[in-house]
Image (cartoon, rainbow, N blue to C red):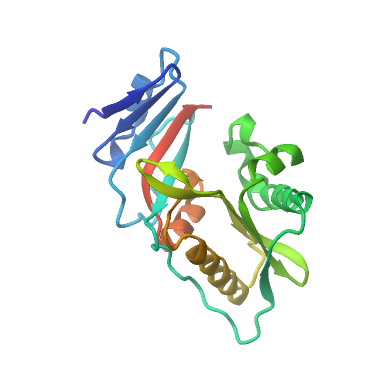
Amino acid sequence: MKPKILRKGDDFIHCEVAYVKDITTRLLDSLLCGGIKTAYFRFPPLKKFPQDGLPFADVDARYALKLGFTARPGGIRRLGKISGRPKLHLAIPATPDEMADNYIRTDREYFLKHFAKLLPENEKGYSRRVVKKGFANSDVVLLLLDGKTVGMACLNQPRERYGEMCRLLAWDCISPKLTKAQRLDAHYQLSGWLMKLCADVALTAHVDAFNVRSQKFHFKLGMRPDALAARVR
């Protein structure tokens, strides 16, 4: 089925499709040409999440795909559970440098270490200056265990998107080295933080199509895939 064209610029195009499975290599080939570098798609939110992730196996590796997830205001779920004597706790970075250093370390250790080969060159790490500028007005929280950062979340300030105010969860991570009990505690604390800050505003997140584990986490949070951005690597 052909997509509905919502908007077109010099180097981008916005479309609407009836089903996420309509986004194929053939469709991207037809759109990402003639100077168009990025195609944005909207589709009805998925109510059920496929066990193996969304069906993009047939999309050529020439294209980098990033899924958009959205939770309605007050739609974030409380995950995990807290132990009787929690060792994990949330803390706000004391300075912009502390925030940037923790972002760079967690990005490198928890994400780039595993997925750098699948990313476009301009997404393979950022400088301290870029991070400080990008998150200058964001709400940022660290998840600490014995004084060491084992998780982090960065939430941008509200802005209008498709006619409603929303916040972008620009970065969230939890160390894969935590025990099961610690991970449940981490989920409980981070989801509670998001519930508090997004009680009356929508929440969005962008997740790489190859990162199925992250997709599942955001789905459990109450966020639903409803958009996709595709561009030539």
